[in-house]
Image (cartoon, rainbow, N blue to C red):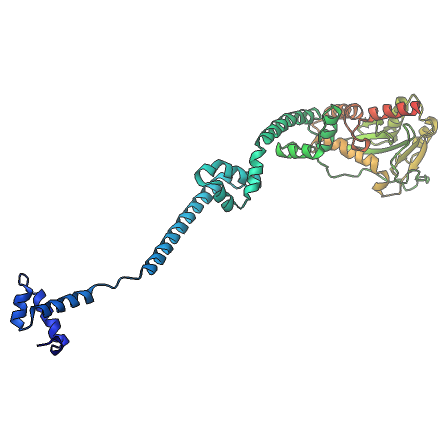
Length: 394
């Protein structure tokens, strides 16, 4: 009987019978079914072939393997990136400067490689290699900065904490050190070295409504071509003890900013300002020789007694407008500086003696030691001496 005479169901049952009869041969099962044993063998072989899974094409296998490899590589890259960022977070500890990132790459390049680190930290490899090439120069700069910072601390201490970066720079240059003011600012900022800042001004002027008019001969021109020609003066309070005050009257030379005369008292009577003017005359050899003295319109400066002393000393009086502090800005700026640098943030001195000694010491340092920005960071007396020398030479 030919194979085509057997239905698909018969063939399937025949194969199933053979498989369910372990130990029997194909020939014996075929004999029971009445078919040729080669026919049954062919049915069994066909069934086995149909049951085997279909193998993918070689090209499909290669594409799948490549995708798996790519994904595994991507996972590894992400894991490395996560590890780099974890270390970076701990390394920076809240700071994220470009130089810090370069240093991070330098410290970790053996573990992760420069290329990967630069990509993750978002810096250029060329920039990193330039930074690395300059390591010796940076070490030398840091050493030089440390030495300079120590000298800045000494200058700041010598000024009793009053000097800011401009005066510190001038002091350094005077000692023969060539230094840029921006470098001084940076080091003072890095090391927390701060000069004394401005305090709020308090007015003490009491206008004299019945005073005889005196012209303003200064007109806010707070300069003078030579010493002993133009002066400004003012009265300021010095807070002491438990709510009490001393008062300071000043006479300031507008050429050199030298404090030529001054007086301290526990009152604001006219003799306070006349004593200061007489002290200035003594500094200038006993006479002010036709110099202009400019003040505000306080009652002391508008008094007959003050006018009399001015005539005796050869002084021409000048006064600004009533209620206009800018007309006597140079004198007020001096007073503000004095209190800022002597009190240094305190509200008052512990007593009158402490205030007198503090002001006395500061005034003498101001004239002979403290550098003035208006004078190109020279001291007032040194500036005067230079002016006299230049005048003689001319």
